[in-house]
Image (cartoon, rainbow, N blue to C red; front, side, top):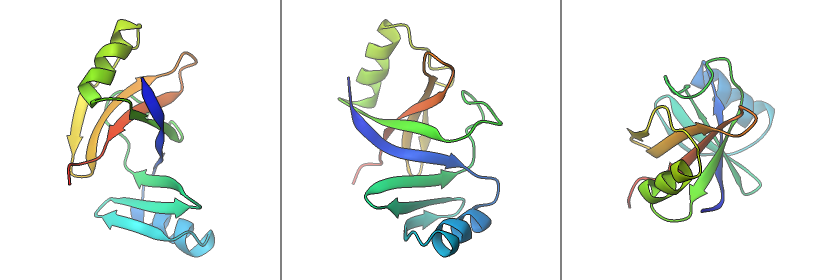
Length: 118
């Protein structure tokens, strides 16, 4: 169904301030950045910083556990829907990839993430 954790998303209000904290305060290298989005490497664990999705996750929520789909994104979404998982925002497209947002059984924010081709 899923192959593991792809990334942990940290919703941020100010990307410049967040990059400064993770890079300068914590000492983590920024691997990639593009406008209001950046990725740091935390000893092999990817931490992505970006704005909150407008639908599907709690506005005041914290980190989002993001899973790597075991097959294609549509295939995994379909299989999870068959098991009762709801995807209120469907699949959304972004320059940095595609996501499908859902909640776990306890109401925690989660996503499936598929990176852009290339």
